[in-house]
Length: 145
Figure 1 (cartoon, rainbow, N blue to C red):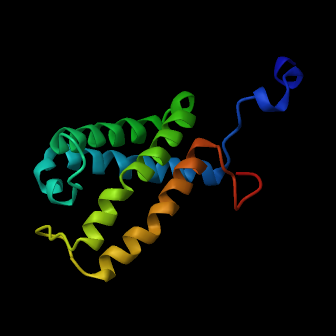
Figure 2 (cartoon, helix red, strand yellow):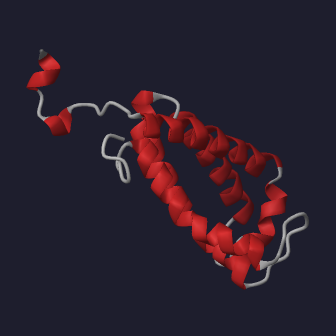
């Protein structure tokens, strides 16, 4: 068979159950948050650090990125790049989360205590990892994905 003759590194990975579960969970969640970033862009302005240029446009672009990434996780041909993109996205928005937590920015409707900020900051690396699992780049902790 042709597939058997290709080197292992060039074969498309067959997604395991963990990867599919992550894609089916993370994808809709990111897409939903992306819609929220577009519909309620103004609500996110207070948590944007001052050094971010065109903050409203950046918020709207992050919403589009979340929607594209979330949808991309559902399409096998796009899954790898969508997951890598969402991992990079999670790293890029981390400064806004830090600003929100440490500069005591108040956003109506959101808690402003460490019961909210602590888990949110601690889970950011988990979101990066989950996006990479969805992409098929990382298989840990399961050997077979």
